[in-house]
Length: 128
Image 1 (cartoon, rainbow, N blue to C red):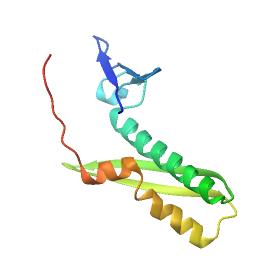
Image 2 (cartoon, helix red, strand yellow; image 1 turned 90 degrees about the vertical axis):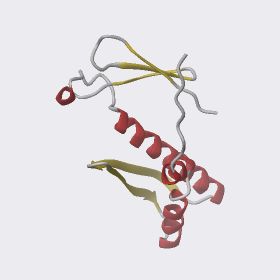
Image 3 (spheres, rainbow, N blue to C red; image 1 turned 30 degrees about the vertical axis):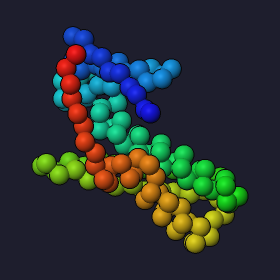
Image 4 (cartoon, rainbow, N blue to C red; image 1 turned 90 degrees about the horizontal axis):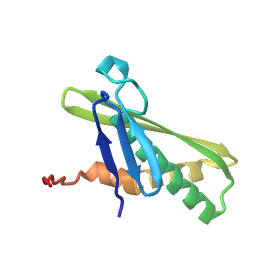
């Protein structure tokens, strides 16, 4: 199970995040009143999708013993009104044929974070 804890004090809008043994930070840019000391929340969302995509495709290519030297995942989130959309672009380095490239693109559509975002999920909030 994934777990993260986020804390904020009086410095707008710097957030300290702990997940496992890792310390992260988040913030808003100056244009939104922050100090830009870390990625904004939607940037972290894009990062999670990009990381999951890269890890899943690397695992798949290794299992198939395909000559994938590197892959790059460019993820952009756009919010227009109340509607959000994510665009993901994959770039591969290595001697992959068109069928292998298409298969990796197909696998990208079924990574765990991709499926979670596509299906949506309930979020419950309680007070302590």
